[in-house]
Length: 240
Ligand SMILES: Nc1ncnc2c1ncn2[C@@H]1O[C@H](COP(=O)(O)OP(=O)(O)OP(=O)(O)O)[C@@H](O)[C@H]1O
Ligand SMILES: [Mg+2]
Image: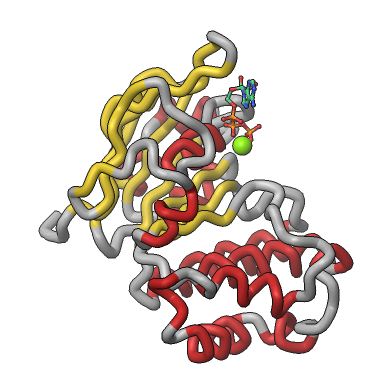
């Protein structure tokens, strides 16, 4: 892969009250890639995203963005360096309108100058958000809230977006819409790290994948190879 490493994680460990959630995770994301990290319930997917984003403190390990060590920086500073996340459970401001939530995403220094254009881009991507721009975020449907969470991340003009299970709680039809949005963003030049339990769909969408089990990466490689791996097929794809 010729493109430079955008995000590099080395030996990341996270523990909660002495119990390990991540035990030395290493991975690289090159500029322009769409990679996925797949794993079952409790594998450590959310802990991985939250520690990269600076929300959860790691006990050891290094996170680098564009070659610069960002481990231990507060979440706003991580965002300011071009790393946005779309959280599990969305984390929207329910009592603010759709547009106010989007404007908050665009209030970072890196994003301020182009805020109006980016808002227009988000509204073109999600016509539904434009229609509902004055509605309170807390009153949106699950799928609309997911769109808003993605829109808010886009507003921060990220170089890389990390998605934590964007399909969770959505119908199969909306899941396909959501995966289509992830693909569309990637085609716009945004690097994507997708964390998912939907192994078949995320491997089908991505260039490369990592398999996370009990806090460790047990396998990684081109997504096509992982899809054809008999162990993955047995453990995650319901094939015998
Ligand atoms: N705040 C916390 N306090 C204590 N333990 C936690 C906390 N958050 C997560 N854990 C534990 O850490 C482990 C990894 O959890 P994590 O939420 O990262 O997994 P996940 O892969 O995102 O799971 P899911 O698919 O259910 O979202 C689990 O055993 C979980 O119970
Ligand atoms: Mg999770």
